[in-house]
Length: 53
Image (cartoon, rainbow, N blue to C red):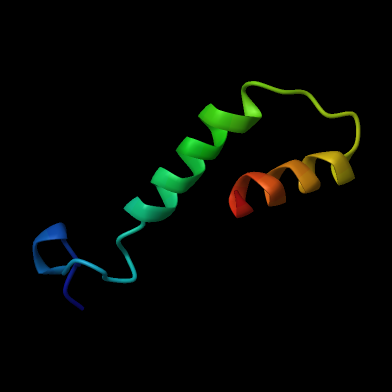
């Protein structure tokens, strides 16, 4: 079996997760590092609001 390398992947490939990494990095910087929540429900609501706005 041949080993996969970055050279034989294309943009938008299932192995390219840069968009997800960028999303979670921005979420961390803009929301999670700036606030504190006492319940998971509050956190979930804040994340939902952050995504929708």
